[in-house]
Length: 229
Image 1 (spheres, rainbow, N blue to C red):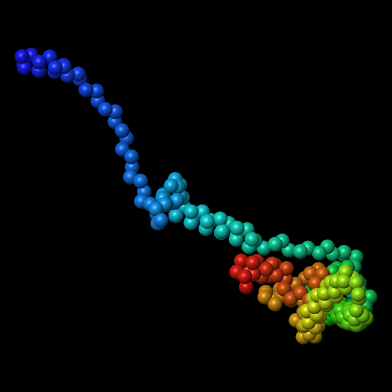
Image 2: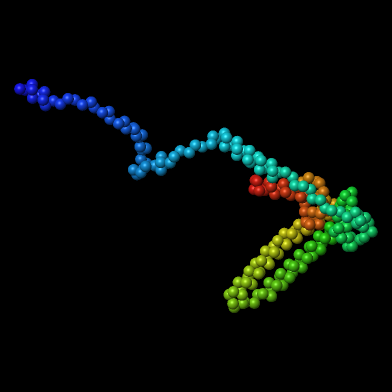
């Protein structure tokens, strides 16, 4: 009876179905300080450019930019009127015009008459600056009366500040004018301080106090931008 009961109670074993495989989860990153998961561990890693490629690209870009900036500018061509080329021989310095000075032959660059012409220009420029400085002093002296209206007073103070800044720039220009006159007296006027080449009549007419040629001036400005000197 016991064997029969055991046989009847034991059911036929059904084949066991394989359990589905569960992907093994990777270990969670260790929490950062304070129990919080580090934000860096949650970010997806972005493939970076190899250092050699990045540095090569940066260098080539810099060299290309620098080489483009260092290309010398085209020379300034001043149009000469051949009909005026010999007028300087028969006219006085006071009678010469800018066009007649430009038309002078290159072989006569910075001869006595040209030197005297630019000296006269510098002296006139100096006289104008000194007259403006005197007018500014007189103007400031006249405006010493106290203005009751705050708006009017603010306007006057702003005008005074602007006028003083202008006079300060002219004061610096006055020093350059005096140095240029000294260069004329020494016979060094009209030639670049760096290269010794002629600055050019056209540039000197536009800027009588110039001490560098246009190319040398642009090279200096480029160096100042690149190196901060």
